Image 1 (cartoon, one colour):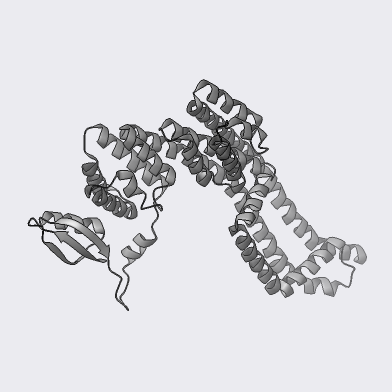
Image 2: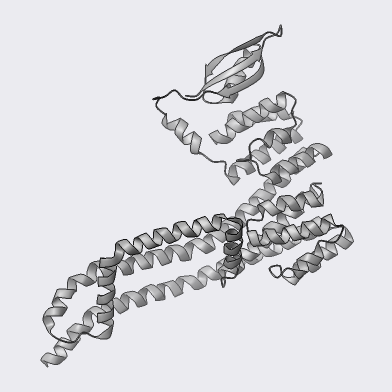
Length: 407
C-alpha cells in the first residue's frame, strides 16, 4: 500500500507533518480532516528498494480512465449540482462511489484542490490523462456562465455520441482484419505444415508435377528456409514504419494516405468530419470562443491531415475572415460542409448547423459499417474457401496424373 507524506495545519495554525499509509491520497485527506487538521499538501513517497508491489496497486497503476467512466461521472455530478449540492460535496460523494480506482483517486485530489480555493477547471487541467482540453475548456465556460450542470450534461451526451461513432469505426476496421489474419494463418499452416508431408509421396511417383502443385511446393520450401529472414524484415519494417509515423511529416503522410483507401478511408473521413463538427459545435454552444474552440478541435480531430485544415480555418478566423471559405477549398471536406457552415455563420446558428452536420455523418458512418459488414463477410468466406480449395486441389492433382499414367 502507498505511503503518503503530508503537511497539515491544526486549529491553532501550527504546521504538522508526517506520513500515513493509505490506498490513495483522498483517504489521507479525509483522515486528516477528521482529526481536525486543514490539509496543506499530500505527496506519495517512492517505494523502498526491494519492496514488493501488491497486485491491486499494480492494476491501479496501469488502469485507465475510459469514456464510459467519464460519462457516468458527468451525469452524476450534473444531477447532484442541479439538485442543490455544492461542488465539493458532490465530488466527495463521487470520490467514494466511482468504481474506477484511477478516476476515484483523481476526483478526490480534484476535490482537495477545489477545497483549497482553486477553480474546478484548473484542478481538472492537472490530470490530462483523464480530462481532455475539450472537457476542461467546457467546464471553464460553465464556471464563467454559471451553468455547470447544463455543461456537464452536454459533455455526457457528447462523450456517448463520440464513443458510439468510435465503436462503429472500430467494428468496420476490426472484422475484416480478424478474418484476414485467420485466413492467412490457415493458409500458412496448410502450406508450411501439411503440404510438406506429401512431398515425399510426390517425389516417389516419378510423374511431372502439375503447375499449381509445383508452385506451392516452391513456396513451402521458400517459407520454411527463409522464415527467419522474412520475420526480421517484417519486424524491421514495422519498427521503421512506426518511427516514421511518429514524426509530424510521417504522421501527416500516413493519415492522409489512410483517408484515400477505398471504402475504409471513406468511413474514417466521415468519422473525422463528424468529430470535427460535433466537437466544435459543442464548444461553441457552451460559450467557448470560436478561435479557442478551433485550437482545441485541432488537437482532438484525430487525423493529422484533418488537423492541418483546422489550422487553416483557425488562421482565417484569426484574420477576421469566415470559416466557410477554407472549408470549401479543402479537398477532404465535401462541399456541403462548407456551404452549411456558411449558412450557420450568416444566420448566427453555427452551433446548431455543426451539430446537424455531425448527426448526418454519424448516420452515414453507421449505415456504411452495416453495408460493409454485409458485403465483407461473403467476400472473405469466398476468399478463404477458394484458397483452401486451391491447396486441396494442388494435393490431389499429382494423384490424378499418376492414375492417368498408370492407365
